[in-house]
Image 1 (cartoon, rainbow, N blue to C red):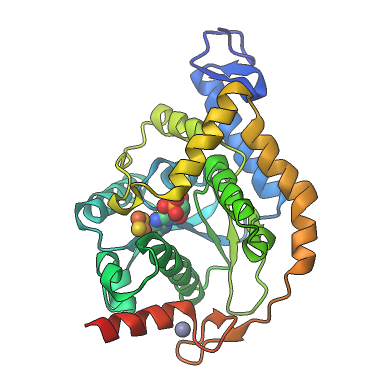
Image 2 (cartoon, rainbow, N blue to C red):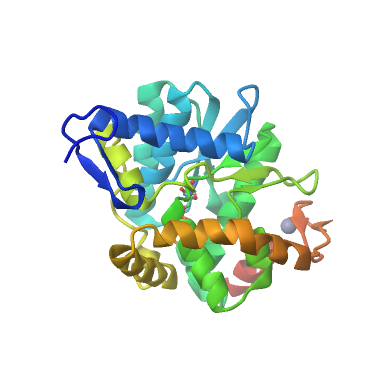
Length: 300
Ligand code: AMP
Ligand code: FES
Ligand code: ZN
């Protein structure tokens, strides 16, 4: 197998691109894909400070690595979910990464704002733990960005994550999530910061290869609550499709973004209010995070 760029020995074959790359040219390819995402969706400019949400995993640390290499002004944000050793280890990975590169890292504890760590959510609400956790993460990312004056939050969601989310939303024809599924969510309210996903063009296999080749020390373990999650099942199904038909995942997501999403966007008509308690954005009176925090208080 020869590298498409230089003709040297390739280390990675990308069947959906009908190409193979040596290590330096793969790294270059990866960075160009991130650059293309940032440009195409006007995610952020070099003048803006970007808050990069890092979980300690390969995707978000890989993303932070690319943005640092490209000279963007970035700060990391780690949300301590209080999930036993998993959180301790992932926090340590983020702290080591930031220290090695002299990059600033903010650490926010979920317990402080929510009144309990994520494992405690289980008995307090009928919501699945992962869904309560996702809600809390989105809330705290936005809050941290607003408080610290960042206009945009970047997450490490990759092509596999986005395709699996899309698959799940389509299985249930959830029109609101379908309208919101995008690599770049604009700020539609003064208290809502932009959210962007610069890795949406890159697969999980590619982010793993990038992290490996750049010698990024990341947490390999999955969150203990992720076991049996439907999103993992959807990823597996899409991987099987991809095996027999390289490019299927990409076509599924990109086809939707181009042809399907505009129709759903027209259907979505939400009015955003400020939460009566915390002032963050909600479609109701109290935001989901404040409701969850109430449920936890009651359960105690
Ligand atoms: P996940 O929802 O775990 O698939 O993570 C998707 C993205 O959300 C990651 O790539 C990160 O950018 C962000 N993220 C997940 N967990 C955390 C965390 N504990 N702290 C900060 N950002 C996170
Ligand atoms: Fe939130 Fe697993 S990371 S429940
Ligand atoms: Zn609230």
